[in-house]
Length: 70
Image (cartoon, rainbow, N blue to C red; front, side, top):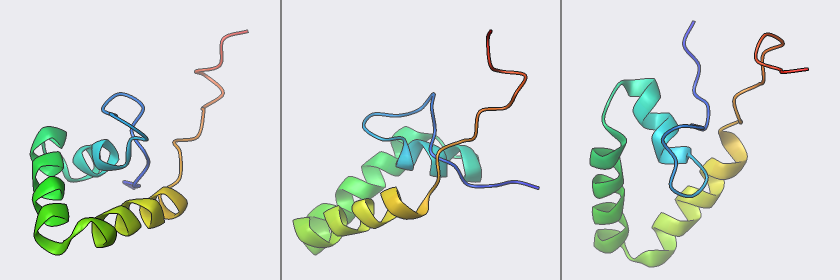
């Protein structure tokens, strides 16, 4: 089952938009352009609030035991 996580590879700041890109199999650059358009079209506050809410809702990807280097 596919789950939404913050991206560790495709991140500029916290990996929220990169995570959405990985989840929906869309280029994160395209999603960032859409997000910037959304922020500019609605004003700064709604876009920033949306991103901050996503920071609290979208979890970090858990570290699998196989990925841990001893």
